[in-house]
Length: 467
Ligand SMILES: Cc1ncc(COP(=O)(O)O)c(C=O)c1O
Image 1 (tube, protein in one colour):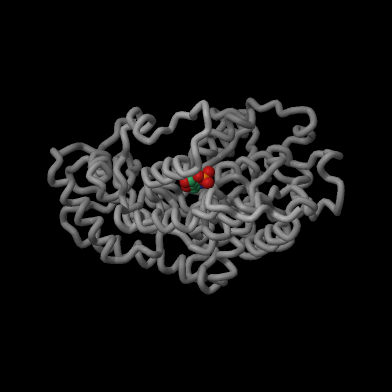
Image 2 (cartoon, protein in one colour):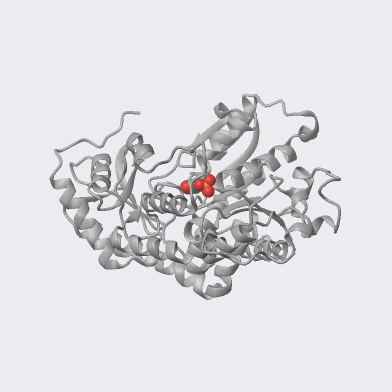
């Protein structure tokens, strides 16, 4: 049956108007006011009505909500490891929603399955995992989880079928790793207490000798090393653990090596920064979020393995009501974490079509260039203290003698910037991340000026954190 002709009550006909309004607002108000959560419910009419609203009223509420949402794409947002946008990726994501594809079978998703395969192959090639395996997941945390499941099942025979004894199997990761490692250990029955944190150096990199020592000691104590999770681009300092020597330790102890490159995996896009992940081809698996440095809308994350066939081996299920046509390769649902699954491939494919390898290389180079501009400003300013030597696009610093957390809160309250803080070497520090290549040097200078202005209005404070 042909689709019904659109009428002015079809909300999709208002899409352009709403988008124009939203995009203009990003320019006019890069940092929108934070609303009091209790007042927001009534002010914005958030409660679900018993009787449906007319379309124009619904659209008005939709517009109000969207315009009251913190902007992450403009010049005032420095708070997360994503920011800005590749516009064609956004368009593709809108189209993905309109198509409403579910990525389990070729019958339901058609060519979208091929895009996913092409992207996975491309990213595997960049990681030195050609011929390996991979899947799209709902985020870096779950990419890490997928790797942990595979590592667990590979290490402990039959655990997928008969369960996992847990208790004395240890996951090693650096003290600077992302919290998803511990969370996943809790979710997977490994136990959060069985995540052993290995010391990192002053730059934030896991120390391979300390890892080796920890494994030797634990093994002597009757524990079993399950896997090592190294990080490429730690969340606060942006440090890259040295993969090559860690791979040697992994080999010595016959242990799985996963690389959490949720943030730093994009270093693989640039010859200049690929050496930060030297030895990646020796790792067993890799997490890489395209929604962080590659400018595609959340969520877009992959987990890749060096060895072929592992996702099928550890995630397959039979379902006669679903997998009815085509070979398994064309039915990603036979080896994914989910059943119904959003299409996260189209947006990345569209961005990569448009930018090409060269464009993505330039994007990463520009992010780094911006971070070096900011770093230079921090280093030359006598009122600022650099917290650690940065390897990546994170610049951590303090306004000497002023409380970092309050500075960030105040910048937000005054609608000057969304900027976050973290802990480095036992001190609260401001964490700047240059992930939006559309931001300019002038905007970074303005941010720093605002940081200092705000700091001046605050009483002195101590950033040291009691452990
Ligand atoms: C190093 C690292 N790993 C994993 C994650 C989790 O990624 P996601 O937010 O996509 O779950 C993050 C998020 O910031 C991260 O910094």
